[in-house]
Length: 470
Image 1 (tube, one colour):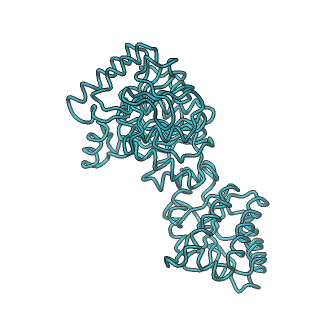
Image 2: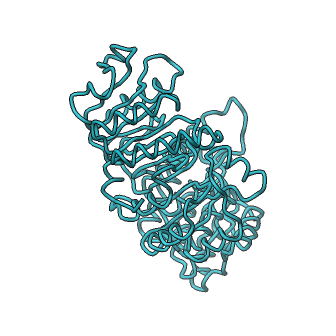
Image 3: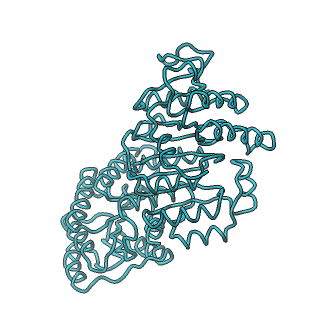
């Protein structure tokens, strides 16, 4: 079908919602979705539908869609595949505009499931409504507090990243892990088999969505290669697009077919699309959220010249090797900066240079601040990257000292106006030192709130910086 922004917008920004198969019985999907949506506090009428229930979690329950006091914008089906067709006919009869079909058992399950899916699509076409799914988790949208994803603890604060996913599980993983790292989402869409609305539709939608600044996605197959390529061309000319594509090996192609019934795309074709359109490639949840974090705080193509600062010569040397392997550079300090930094660090027993070895995880804080300021202002520095092992820093400066380190890094970032990335981790795994984990998390959030991305390791930080520079 042709792309229609308003049709998709009416689903993602639905003003009323019905959950068919809502349940109060623990462990049922209907219960999971109902509980999550009630806790998210949807910004509009929410109708619970189940012919076998009178009340669920303190809310009135209706026997069917035709008994509702109004036609909802969006209907979420949490019922088995074999029961879906009759409810879809009801959706057509009352004039519903959008349906999310969560159940599996359609095209991905074989011939009988494919027949079911084709009939569902025929009912939707004749009834004038669009389908997300089947075999999906649905939609999370903090703008209207919609979560037809099992995400009771998702943020209610909108962000600027849209994530689309054929996998329901990965849609939740990226949303939750991204949130824990300070990412905000304009929406997350799990679309499963893509019987109707597919990856091309959602890329086009989020390209036109004013709230979305970055488009990201997990893809298994592509429904129409030519149309998808055109949508990518349109989107990447306006916004960064980050895509994680699976189904390249023979075994993963089989898994894709059984998971969502999708046709995989060869590695050669996919890599050609990535190069042609300037897509940022990602692989895995960690790399996806790392790249999104860099885009959020460093922007697109912030520069490849790094100044690597750490408390140890070996750490800096290792980081420089990784940087160059990732296509980044660690250039020598500009002469004037070298002299000024040398003057500061000679009092602390450290040595100026790039990589910058401050001599210990932490040196006296006045000298540390002076060195960081010079490093950030160095003319050949695009991004200052600072590495700190929390356990060593705690041994030297205590919790109060680590708080001051955060303050110094924030001050340097503000005053210099230069991008800064921080690597925080602990080398202590002693169960009696759990306090360190709390300190690390507090430092991370403090820095993130000031626009400083924080990573758990050198490879993850530098891979993300490399990817946003492609």
